Image (cartoon, rainbow, N blue to C red):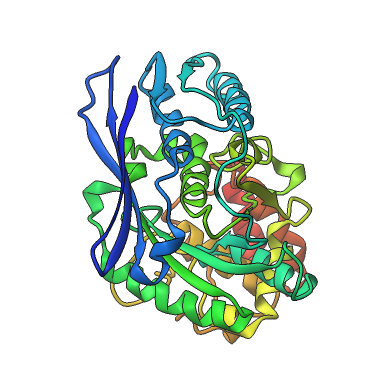
Length: 374
């Protein structure tokens, strides 16, 4: 793979950085990949080679490329980190993914990006990122460089990430409005970001198991004129770690000496995060956990992720207090349309059982235990 023609443009509405990916050892077509934001944040976007290198390394391994070549200089710290990333991918794939050569000169000194002392957080609207935002903004003092001042909502992630489902910009706009309410309550700016990096390979297993943290990190690198640090909220707690596209052994290795990437809140289980969000009204009324992206609701109330979240809230006695779900209760019948034993979700359900017992919801306890046995 060669990454060429890095470019930066502004047209009065959007700021746009891009590069051309040229494949060498597979039959994939050449593709322009990009990261965009609105004009209001245009000055904060850079055609940083790190963004495209980080965004491309996992798809390059997936398709069996032998190298990634760039004319741009890269941070030696990032290059070392990517060697660790590739070794981890090799381990997780039982040798199917093999390390490739990174053919790019390393920087001889520090870059020209000024240090801003500014931190950002990727805000999807789910419980992981909302709990991370709440903890950060209530723990860090106003003048601390670790305080989150910017939240980034990414189109091309769960919304607009799968090409066959369409771009769904109207769904993103709805999510952006909801996240704006939350970010403003937390005292943060909200930055809309648009990217097609996932389209290099939008297979679900690759995305969830190995790729999505790299896309977040790539976006972070494109905002180095604005950010010194970005947080990625943990998907799993320390006691239930599994191979995942965002992982504490993975995300920090995408850092450079211009941008530190922090994978946070490993000590928190999913019920801990639900409690934090349930106690924050702005977030509790506007969260979005659903990936179905239905037309008229933030959360469909039917998919596995919705039912899982609602069940946890039943365990806290809090479901009826949120407008983010139309439903006020969960019934055993709502579990019948899906499995709960795929993609390492078992721990999330086991964690709920003591809470459901406290609420005397033995019907849901029996249902979960049966589904876990299946």
